Amino acid sequence: MKHWLMKSEPSVFGIDDLKKAPKKRSAWDGVRNYQVRNMMRDEMQVDDLAFFYHSSCDEPGIYGICRIAKTGYPDHTAFDPTNDHFDPKSKPDSPTWYMVDVEFVERFERPVTLEKLRAHAEKLSDLLILKRGNRLSITPVTSAEWRYIVALAHK
Image (cartoon, rainbow, N blue to C red):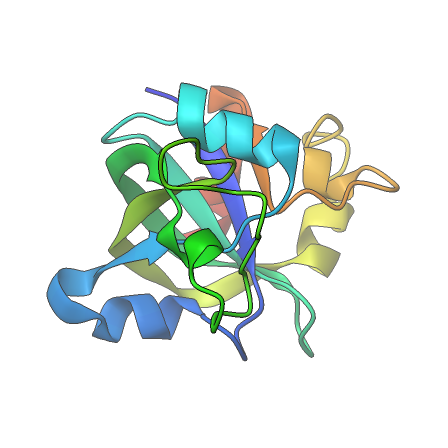
């Protein structure tokens, strides 16, 4: 099993939206970065776990956990000209973009804020969200980082 960190703006789709979704499950669509696309298409597997990270908000941080519920499949929003994520170069018979389905697991009582993650940088020195210039919406998380952050969340 692999671990991930998945970033979303809570004003667009936050962990509470996932919790309220039918069957507490939703597609993670609209990703338009090749490196992240490759992770969703080639690496993410059912039952992998991911931190749900809120970005571009008053208190950025990890707000909970979701589970990969369906492996990568073509992102249909790329084919819809009325959708914000439309890409005229992506075709149903030759899709450019992929998505996964995620399922709600847990909302932390208190988020593990970016500030708190930075305060523990000695233990999380390789966590990609803490690296300068990293703007990927999905990043891998090591097992050691996962355990450490879960322990922080449950303190």
